[in-house]
Figure 1 (cartoon, rainbow, N blue to C red):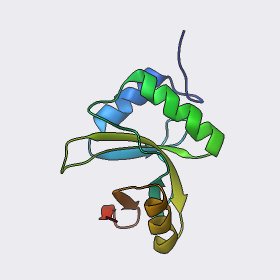
Figure 2: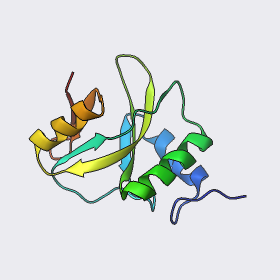
Figure 3: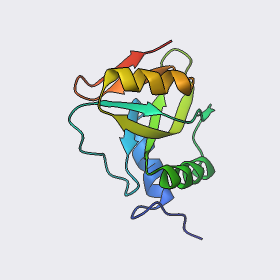
Figure 4: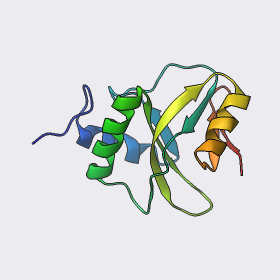
Length: 119
């Protein structure tokens, strides 16, 4: 059985994630969304010592239900990896609110290409 996102296989998504070890956000086609500004914030808390194909498949299913994105990042402090359902927020205030609601450590500032810690 070939597991798939929309147009990209789970194996291809896994390779894309591993090639971007600092972090990346993908749409369900395995492409980087074209937002130039705003913030990414996760609404799940899928922390793991390493990413598996099963986890990728689970997050894709969750993201489809929420019409959201696949978000990956590695926390430089702990070394843990996160593979989450991620949403886009236009404002910093809303992104921080979402992050705190879902017990997130950080959000991603798209325009400035940097992490913003919220805890």
